[in-house]
Image (cartoon, rainbow, N blue to C red; front, side, top):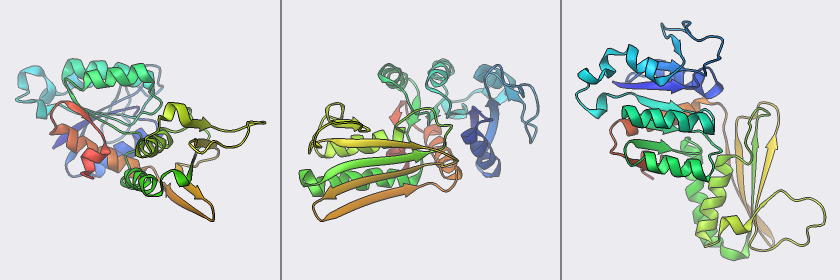
Length: 273
């Protein structure tokens, strides 16, 4: 049985992960955590789960995770984190101190935070992915394949759409798509990425990779990579119907992390593709 601690348990993704964990035969919820000011802290949020304010409080309340009773690192709970960049880095520090593996789906991490992530992976296994769905990770592969096949004769534009409560733009998945395409085309994304266009910006440069974000309503997540040539256009699109797709991927990543050696992994590693 794999134990998990769900961070941001009352958020959209947190709730989906909790529901799927409860329905799983090999996943057990060790605890659920929310920010210290959350109104439901200390209450039963269902199935006898008491909402906690920290990872430490969950670990202290679990006899199986007390240091004197842990036979190996495999007994430690896996921390699943879909929160905010700042909160994730704080949770990462605690995970390193406790030796707990982590699954991170938080997007919008900056360069410094990514460096801290890589450093932490020297001591604990971390699965970090901008998107944990199987379909999206196949899109990454297909986008890179298309870029290599079509080359510089086709111009690249990326469009993503999410709900109006998403705080970062463009999405981490859109940036990942742009990154794999830029790598396939041997371009420096920092130099060729264009985030929206307005005014008299002149003709489009052939090497540009356009990245555009739409926000509105309850769109869970849509991404399209366009390869536009003279006379034809190839579009590779992924649409999410509900968050269970991400939750299922997160639990699959938790199973992987629970048995992995220290290191920084992605969903390609988890899915073996």
